[in-house]
Image (spheres, rainbow, N blue to C red):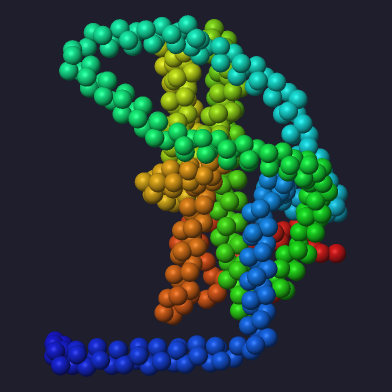
Length: 431
């Protein structure tokens, strides 16, 4: 039987461990001091030059973001179609592959604008006819006044006080409202001034897209050569984190939204055959259902409420039928489609995800759609930085093991010269 270790021996072991860690810490600080002393004036000047260039670029982009909107849209299109270009590049010259993909995008957008947009406009107009008119609003106001007169006197006093407080709040904020109107007017004038640049941007975007997609690989290599050697692996690791998340969002959630929209449209078409009046808005409701599918957790709930409200404007039975249709479509997608398309880029607790969606909703609808992938990028970035700061640190360019086990990154070894996402390195061998 092994003898028990005495407290004195255990304390000695702890002291030796602390002494070993202190020695390692002193050696780390010594190396850090050597690196600081190794910085030359020229190297420091280059650092400030690069930092100044980045700051100026950010300021210019912020001041000209309206004029650059076409290029932002073009960059999103380029990122979405890049896998198709790389796939065609295996069989065709890259220039021809880019041209074919861009022609497909133009045909898709043109078909939507010429065929679906007019139908959507008609359906929105029909839906607006179901909204209460002036007489209905006046009747509602009269009913509200009658309800107020029938209240007991104490409750009338309470309601009167509430309306008085509301009116006082409005009067106190009139100055703020007027200043906002002035700011909006000035912003509108500035937007009109920028219209020329906006239109010019859309005119040159096709040529810009052609150049970006054609020379994309050489651009990646140029960035890799510009980066300092000590920064290169970490930089491409951050790119891979963002790329794998947004690529999974496009390949999974976007395709899932398209499937949900198609199933909803098919279900509404069946309702139309059965004589349901709400089927007149099947394209509008199908597009809305697909769009809400891009917002995890919250989107399907919003879609269910809107489906019920749209049907309830016709009758309560129609609202229940539409809600049941959307529920059935959701169950079919969850059971048979989602397991084949799901990429676990969103292994985030729903409570945290809902908070992220609500917080980003303050910046606009566009940010709501990107809330889930942005939350995943921030989480994985934190994990990567935390791993790099551990003792011992995780090697540069190696992504967290949790993400790798979730199947979000490739296990293939990458070249030591350029660490870039796999999506950027597919295609035929360079000629």
